[in-house]
Length: 451
Image 1: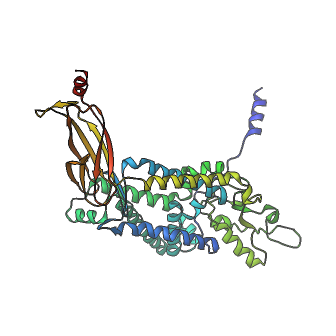
Image 2 (image 1 turned 45 degrees about the vertical axis):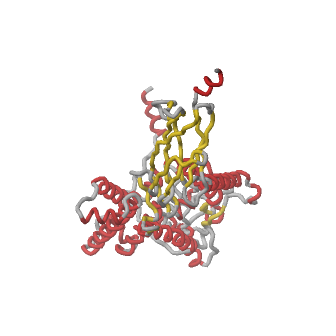
Image 3 (image 1 turned 60 degrees about the vertical axis):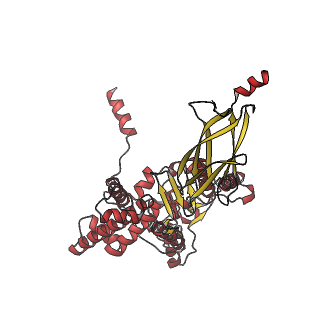
């Protein structure tokens, strides 16, 4: 019995292949997909690094003030009560990502994702400083000269400088550079700000310099649920197996496909996969393997397109109802968000009855109701708010830009005026007056009517 079990165990045994202990070194290649990636990523990086230096009306153009809970986007200010707008932007962005992903695969990952953008930037510096992929791999094997070690040290310094610049820029969206510089000059810089700079710089250095493809493969959630959005008509990077197989160098005695098994498609892949094994969750559709393969095909005098960016099955755009459903959701969300934004009042106002007394009989035989008016100036200018009860002015308050204020107001009526709704009008500058309705209480009017 034991011998039989031993034989069964040996039959089910799977040999474990040794893992390459050296990190994946990306070989950069030129081509149309790399040019498209430059066209998309360089403006995004420029916008990221330049925006914190821009000002609008002597204030940072983009500033997320978490202390006062206000988000400044040029002349537009978002507040906590604008949750519907923020939610609309997030939902619309999600549907837009679904639409793009279903139509053209992981364009976000390959051409806009910060992880891919910073990774390619670090790889570009690595290749410019340390040399070719082969020389870098020799260094990994411990075969580096003193000059190569010095070059790697310089590379780390430049990586650290870029990571630090990234951290400072990211924090500048929450801690304006002018304020930060003034605090730094006085030696009063926030400990929390310093900690965030260290954390963001460290994560940038580790993700773009060391983790790279491991982050996309194991940590990024998008690679896990992308299959939900893909179908057979989604454009993705694909290998033409019928044309390429069997692989190998062509010779008279052995008929092979167009793939010469040069492995350049693997060397240039930022996520270290072999696209010839089929569509994989780690593929970010950057097209680097297409550029490399096309160059090899041109050198061999063969047609390009062994690795292409196309769908598995062709179908007209009008037949893809699910795709246009995502597009319709994007449009509807955008319209609703825009409508909500345009209909926002520049002044948010609410009124509540005083909780101490509902009504009060004055010596002048009038009935007085007390209220508390809460106001929020949502504009970037100071507002002077005048409060009217019918045509009678009952108060005035000046509210600085973005500030909140409260005002106690009294509504007074003759004793014979019954309880009911009363309208309060708020006038502020060139804006349309705002009307609030409150309930006025007068039990004495009912007693007088009964008598």
